[in-house]
Length: 504
Image 1 (cartoon, rainbow, N blue to C red):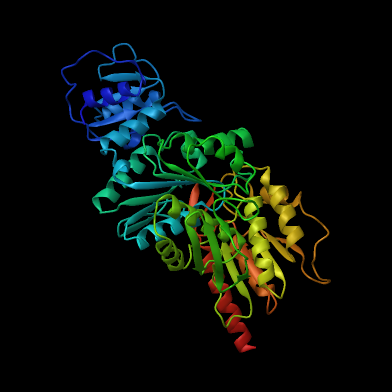
Image 2 (tube, one colour):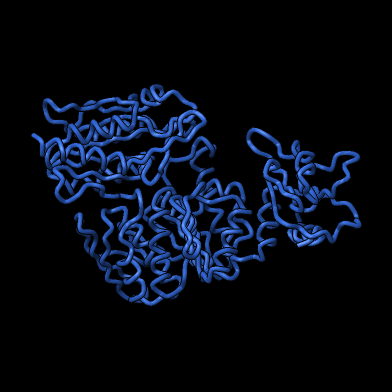
């Protein structure tokens, strides 16, 4: 790509407001696309984004000093500015389209499945990837837990990365021999245009529940962001939609090729009778092309929805039913998603899950309740600097549906953990199923201490849920991320309990 090519890409998208005429350096090769002036490298184009706290245009001079060959901004070039400059209607759209073009539009060489919704994206993405792998189609994954590119897996920094990183990963997948990508598409990514310029083979809508209202104005705005995925689909692409969700039918009416799934409504893809156990799920799934016989190690009703979404996606991609069955059976689990960390010989069952919204917490507890003959002990907190409205709602759900609750920290960030706990406590429901004499509701700000306390006070046969952080290996306190792993802390506490019982 040259500077002239970059201008032509933006002009073809009708984004250019003003650009200088032909310049001697118009054929200068471009070495990359940057949006952070501190990380800009010689030869790159700097796209100046308008953020919540700063305008990237203010850092254009800094980027030029670092050697960029041109600047793209929503503002006009300052008087006397010598470096080539293009003024555009939307810097974010410019970043997305320039990134896709720079990396050779890699999504056109992949079957990219975009999965959006509040809950279920991660497990659905892993199921879809497993089905595609069963079809001998090498599949990359981009999502909350990790980025998988060929044989390389690395921890994710964002559910859906910024456009240059995203397109770079898609390019790397093509180069690694992948034929597909299962991508979680967050509402932030859709609102901020990170996936514009990506060609999707199918889009999946899992559900919409309260989340990210610190970023979106309200639930309607949140849904509009999710709906953008389906507005980006090519005319021939399929839309896989959960119509048990109240927003699902609305979405069905706006897409050309809907394929619906549901448990409680008539839909294109539906399950037969359901039964739940720690051994996993066995069910028949009716599809327009026949019955899929599902045998999955995944547990609980929420995973039925995830499986239905994955089966529907397999059908939409014209994969054989036997391939779909094989792919679902091959996925043993997803880190931090109803992850059983206790061993068969332990007196108590301990499960770690990423549930960090009121709806996800309710689903988690309702999934776990039938699986225990003892008490249900829930450990959870809420993230700082995020939607405060869900805190009392999560407190109400935990106290109403659990026998014992330990409220603790999640990622407090810049907030006082005690203040977050107080917000949660405002929703506590006094009438619970706690037996007489049970500890009931405890507040322990130190998350490690809370996990150890929960496992220590659990009785033989109890089930302990540790919710909120799931796969995360860190805890953000202030502006620093400290190593912290719910799974590791829980296993250490179980080992200590096992040793103490043996000594006793």
